[in-house]
Image (cartoon, rainbow, N blue to C red; front, side):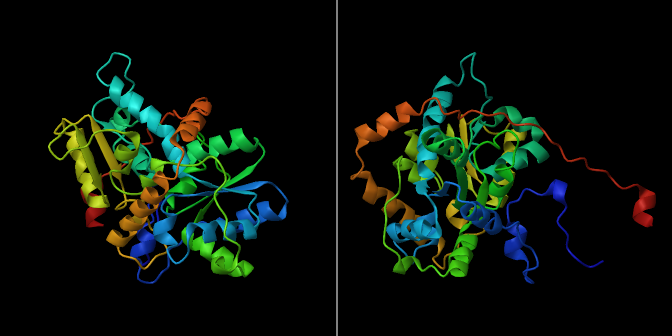
Length: 340
């Protein structure tokens, strides 16, 4: 009837339709009401901030953002970047076991930190499932770490730039980790509703566990750098790419057997720093600069020995997972249908 409609079963929750709709007629399920309900009920609620926050909420210092979240009522505020640090050991192990008989994935291995990539493979190219790394995202690893540290009954709220995280949090395979998901825009909306100005609240530091190079994950190639995996433009064993059109072409090439790489590191958006709900007027390059500067400024201040101990202490956090084919049936119209 002349209106665009989202077909639920075909949706990847990438948020692209929200961005491109000139009438702003598309939206996503809000996490604000659920989060406020948790806080009102008096539960211990933990805010888990995605590492792209420095690129999105750039008008405030990290300490201001943490202080504002405490003013909202969050009992703890942690960096999801630690979850990235935690899964890096699994990626390192998988890469170094490739070619061995016990290797669980086919080459090239496709990184699975981006939920849109996972949905895309499960629904549209299920024949590539054996290539998808059987590893949870940083969000899921962080949620499980928080519950291990602060108790199984805590409420966990992920805050980031991605709409697909709302779908991932409800995936039966990993539904034990995250209770609610807020986009950065929803966070700003919630702060406004509560009358909280980050610049006017007492600044505060993140709660343990402290992150390290996992803060680079929202930038293309950040996984490789933080996991200590080699990447050189002269090395065809690793491919790094981002963006919808390039990702789709790359998956086609893998399906056609045209790619000989061992690892394919992909993000559906142009990095998480360009996620659909990044709330920033900064351009792509300035956002990347913010993430790198923040990571570098804390790298020298992080006690590497203490950080390494926390990684070893959390080795029992489950970071492996399974994916399931959910192919989209496509029906070709008959000649009669077309004529009609």
